[in-house]
Image (cartoon, rainbow, N blue to C red; front, top):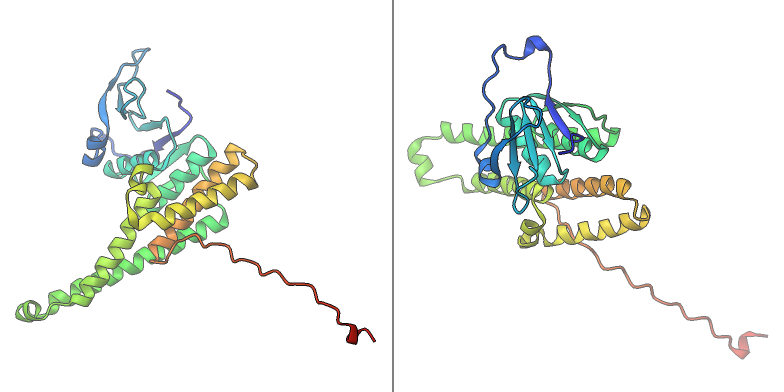
Length: 265
C-alpha cells in the first residue's frame, strides 16, 4: 500500500496520555468496511486493514498505531478518516500526501474542530472555513435558546401549545446541514438517487466540464479545482439556497438598418 496519503495523531509528548487506550472504530465505519488484521512482511507493528468490496486484497484504509494510511483521497475516504480520528479523541493531526489529499483533510477535519498541520490554506479558504464556523455557532446558539425556552415553559403549556414554529426551524437547519454533508461526502450512487440534490449534481457536472476546459485536462489542477467547486456548492446548500444550472439566454440578432431612398438625400 502506498504510504503517501496519511494522517498521524500529533501533539506535544506531554500532551499525549502515558498509556494510550486501545484503538477503536466507530459503528458506522465497522458497518461500512470489512475489517481484518494485515500481516506485516517484516514482522513489525500490528496493522488493521479496512477493505471495501470488491477489492479484498488491498485495504482502502490501513491503521498502524497512531498512523492511518489511505489508498484513495475521495470524499468518502476522507470523511472516514475524520470519523476515526474523532472517535479516538484526536484533536490534532499531521497530514502527509498529495496536495489534494492534504487540502481535503484540512477542510473536513477543521469543520469538526480538529487542528491540522501539513496544509497551509489560502486566505479565501480560511475565510470560508471561519464563516462556516460562525454559521454553525449561530445554529447551536439558536438551538440552545429554543431548548432553554422549552425547559422554562410550564409542562401543561408545552402539551397544549407546542412551539411548532421553533421545531420547524430547527428541523430545517438540520435538513440543510445533512444535505450539505451528503453532497460533500456522499458517494456518486447516493447523490444520484437523492432528488433533492439533482440541481447540485447537475451544477457540479457543469463546473467540472468547465474546469476540464480551463485546465486542458491537467489531472493535478483539475482535482483541486473540482474539490473546491464541490465545497462551494455544499456551502450554498448549507445556507438553504437553490443550486441549479441556468440555460444560457438566447442573444437576439439585430437586423441591419435598411436604407430608405428618401433618407439618402
